[in-house]
Amino acid sequence: MTDTATTSSTPSASGTFVHPALFYATQDEYVRQVGGFVRAAVEADEPAFVAVPGDKLAPLRDVLGDAAREVEFADMTVVGRNPGRILSALQAFADKNHGRAARIVGEPIWPARTPAELLEATRHEALINTAFARRHATILCPYFVPGLPDHVVADARRTHPTLIVDGDDRPSDAYVDASVVCGDCDQPLPAPPDHSVTVEYTIGQLAEVRDLATDWAAGTALDRARAGDLVLAVSEATTNSLRHGGGSGTLRLWTAPGGSAVVEVQDAGHLRDPLKGRSRPALASTHGGRGLWMIHHLCDLVEIRAAATGLTLRLHFTP
Image (spheres, rainbow, N blue to C red):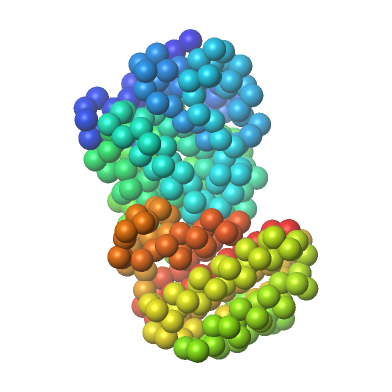
């Protein structure tokens, strides 16, 4: 079964990137159009990667039948638990199929996302256009319109050059440059609670900061492995402060309702490249980014706010 409405968004020339949003309202519509898009890739002998919420995987495998064996699948609620690490997964698939026209289904936004996650997933959708510019690929992004806030659907029109609505493939009149969307995503973060632990640090105090984070994490609902992830993320973030953020910073730690642990690091640094930390840095890179990339992969959510006065990283860890 091939759905021509979705396959019409296939790249037509080398170096062409196509990024359509598929607006759907029912499971049948989803399976028909996404399944058609993926089947067309298999029939064209093009590599296909499907990263969608786990409950969507079985219906897609069923509709694809034997063709599903030619497709790489991933549960987006795991791969994209933190929206900031989705991009590197998509790029990794495209990179290992270098020279071929990759077709990817990426569904980074679903109704159960928190408002903070939705904001960072929207930022991700905008940055795809920058990261994949001039690459020969199609990334189809499904949106369950009835279950999403109106502003999220409106943002999808701004982050996708092409829309698929009721099977009709059309340009998006609302599409804007990624810098505009990312600027709008830089909304002020809620103030840390009064019960947060706060410490100022500078050069020579990294060991003290790590010890503080270790002791504090031990008193949270995090298990030993997640507590270790928190300490490592704190170490990377504070090290970045000393190297790139003016040589000092402020660390805050607190627990949120539900038992989540939250870490905030503020310093005088600047994030000039919005892809830093989202795209995996090359091993031989001299431009940094490895620490922030690691932080994205350790945390369940990373919120970054860049201001003229400095940089704020807010890191979330769920039990």
